[in-house]
Length: 297
Image (cartoon, rainbow, N blue to C red):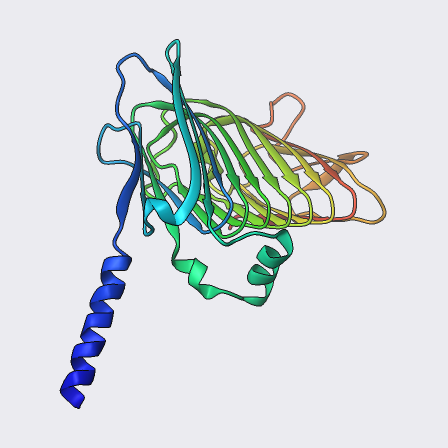
């Protein structure tokens, strides 16, 4: 009897293992005619990972699912020297906004947690990324990549942006844009983005902007906060910082000890002076939410 149970358990485990095998789902090979990639990626549910690739393919996507297990749309088109790629991924049987929110809030249907997509981008190729997440989790590692523009929009997903190997963006990024509805975004090591402009839009969710490391270049941060929370980690005190805040009596703004009022709705640290340009400039508008400035991490 015990032998039968052991064999049965072994067969089940082997079946689960084979079901969970990671398989390549989509691929765009290197094209010598393309020197820029515009990638639009939309996921309704599940977990999504973005990583630098070890090969020269413009795009490789792997999943724990079979292609027929989820609905998707995929297109690629070459316009001049730009390769335009559009991909939308949606798990089957995940209909209804109310049901989706219930799953996230109350932990229903844990089986969806093992559904994931792993997205690999080539090093040395210029990307403009437009990423849209519904529910689930997203982990974006941009270390060593060449990103000229990045746009992230999250409904109720939790998104983490980082540079795991401390390798900065290969070029100056024009705009790093993040919009949060009811989810959360943690953007770490923003100094490595080399982004001229950072746009942050918080609805009811939470956002962390980490500028705690010394910037490579000046950044201008424009942020709006509705009823959510925005936490900003500031760099060392020798980096000039100035903050402009438009607030209301319904909001809360917590300043760090090193930020002092220098004019109405204007604050700066001890390294800032009128003769020296600010390395970090914040232009913030908050209505009902909360903004918190912290020294370092």
